[in-house]
Structure formats: C-alpha cells, structure tokens
Length: 257
Image (cartoon, rainbow, N blue to C red):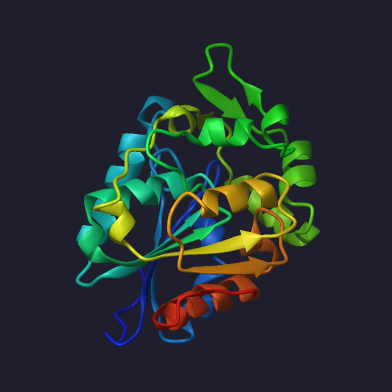
C-alpha cells in the first residue's frame, strides 16, 4: 500500500487476473501515485506473496481476501479488476457495495447471476482456452508460454515479457473459473461501473467483451488499443483511462478512449 494521500484523491484497489499476482500492476501503480492517488494492490490466495495450496485458490477465498483488504482501509475505494478478477470484484461489490465508489473492469468478466468465467470463455472464439493444459482431474490448469505469447502477450515488448514470466504461477486452480457468480441488482447493481474494452484482445475477444458490457448497466465504456494485458503493453494509456473513468463519473456516457 502506498503512503496516505489527500482524501480528495482517489484510492484505487487493483486486483490481478488468473496466473498473475500483484506485480502485474507495477507499471501502472507509479503512474497513479504520481498524480496523488493512493493505490493498494492485492495478491489473491495462491498468488505472489500470498502463497497457499491449490485447494485454497478458490472463489470464496479470492472474494474474502479483497473484502478484507478494503474493509481494512479508512475510506471508500475504486475497485479495478483485470480479466478473471471481474467475477471476483462483482461479488465483492455484492458484499460491501457501500464501500465502493466505482468498479472498473479491464477486459474483465462482467457476468450475470449464475454464470461462470468458464462458460463465458466457452461461448467465445478466443485463442486462450483451447490451448490451456488441464490436470487429469481438472483441479488446475497450466498455461504454455507459447500460448501466453501468441494469445496474451502479442503486443507486449520482449523485455517486459521476460520480467513478467517469472511472476506467473505455474498451476492455476480451475475452481474460480467454474464457480457461479452470485450477484443481485439491489447490491452489486447499485455500484457504478466502467469498462475498459481492449480492442485487439485474443483472450476475451471484443465480441465477448461487448456481450458482457450488455449484462449490466455500465455508465462509461472506453476503448483501448491493446491485447489482453494492457498493464504490460500500454500502462500509461491504461492508467489514464482508469483516472478518466473516475473523472467522467458525473457525465455518464459511452466514450471511445
């Protein structure tokens, strides 16, 4: 967590996606902080510094971890999710809607009640899911480097890829992908939402992102010329749009970034 900032500034809580950890935000965090914002990055269970068993890498623990982080802070926050973490933060919002100023989804899974990340991916023609290696008992999945490079990192510089690869977990639990999302219009639906749509994404295609945006009332949508990992490929542009989503909050509209 960064040093305390002026209460007039935004406090962003950033949640990484599958296989990643909190270091996924290391290029974005200083850009937000240099503008006076506070930033807290989260390591979900089994990721980064929060080492736990694969069985503990489940949706309930993911949600609890983020809820505990936010409730430990002394102010409301803007909660940002990348990819799979969209399903996590939606259910965090279901539990603590009053502590959230806004949800920002970065090519993230914005799902209706009862849906799963896996079902959304199966409905898409992205390049990621067909090339993931699943354990015999389907308890975890492994991500071949070539798949990551071709489907995820196709617009990321090689020097950045070399820095990122050692941070990824080898075995990602599949339970969070198969867990049904539990959200309601009264609680989750009451939290303002923005979506950053990555236009050359090969993991969650533009078509899937468009369908997910239609699942709920999203008051601002921004297009970002990026693949699935804009925090690595275009961190400056991503940080700008995250701040713009907050600044535009009083002027809800669909915008092109």
